[in-house]
Length: 325
Image (cartoon, rainbow, N blue to C red; front, top):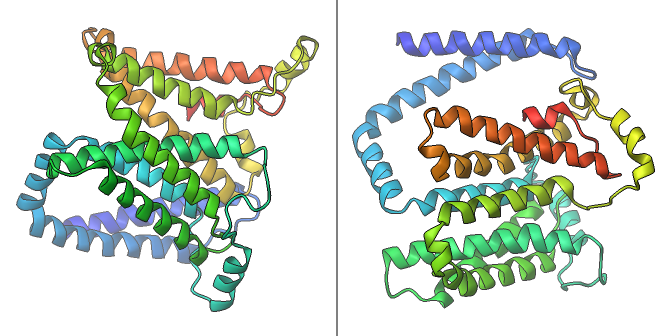
């Protein structure tokens, strides 16, 4: 009982800190009732956690360790799916109101590419096509480890069903709609991943330096996310661009709409997690005397270099906030 009470007290203190911080945030009104509810929620969560830990301490831990040791790619598959779900449903404003769902359905596009060619389709191809190429490859890999006779067709059908389920689920979230082109692009991306990636991963130079290949892929994807749409400036605008650098950390977040700031924060954290992972796996880092310290320094250098490169883009504003995140 004592650990649950201590957890409740920590939850209440954390709630008080959050509510106190709201006195400095535009449009927010601090409330002691909210802090009390935070403490109550922490108490309920602690009780449930205590029950679950005691019930599954042995079996769940053993199963989890066994799965991660034998099929570690499940962790990467979960990471990809988490990003797709967050991007599709954020801010998770679920609506069960019939009229709201009907409005989402009416805004949906059942015919692919009905409105012609758009400039954002290249971003759609990168963000959905490439992500689902990785998902398709991971689904195929894990299915073949469970059932060696599983073919590419079964993996692709499973990916298509997953894509359809995610896209259909959008109609139950406020402000979202169903788009058939998303299904087509994601399904084709999964198909390409299932067909091409096994052959690419079997190449001799990939097998010799897998850590370097992963590092290059993750770094390339991070550079794309941070520097797109690559609208380079002319050199005469460079002094003005340097004057727009945000040196004060989290300055932009202070006046931003909270949900937009939260989405930007989670997107940057999500996209940077693989960088730390692949940097830590590099042979030169692993044999170093202080591998974590050197990996952290290398990540800081990479983040600073990418952010500094945004000086050359007219649509980006470099900031210390992004480097910190």
